Length: 153
Image 1: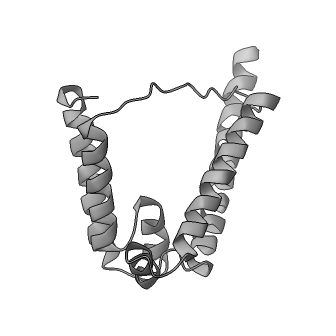
Image 2 (image 1 turned 30 degrees about the vertical axis):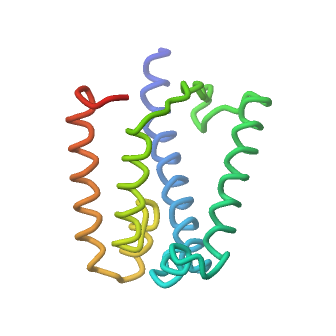
Image 3 (image 1 turned 90 degrees about the vertical axis):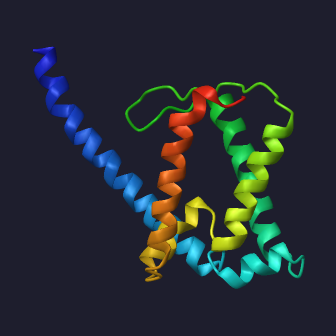
């Protein structure tokens, strides 16, 4: 009896959750587009230290993330399906690999004019050439996943 109710409720909850994530993604894409965060010119301004726009957006995102994490930990917030959210502490790492990874990410961001998040917003906004960047980003993620065991961490 318990198994039947679990199997019928889980797909409904899963579908509802997926729709909520889709709606949140669409809202996030609209915010990225309206705030001009996905604009190649705004990103170039940032890398040339000509405007505070992108630094303000990134700083706001860091602040919201820090406060959200604090609230999740303090109030024991659960997921849509009722599972507890576990945020594990990460050990502090230092060394050349952090600089190499950060520099590679920054170079890719400067060359393409987009970090991974806005790629979907750009694609949805009609910038079809960004599909090449999205494909290459997926290849890079797959390569990292394959090479991760042999990379220094």
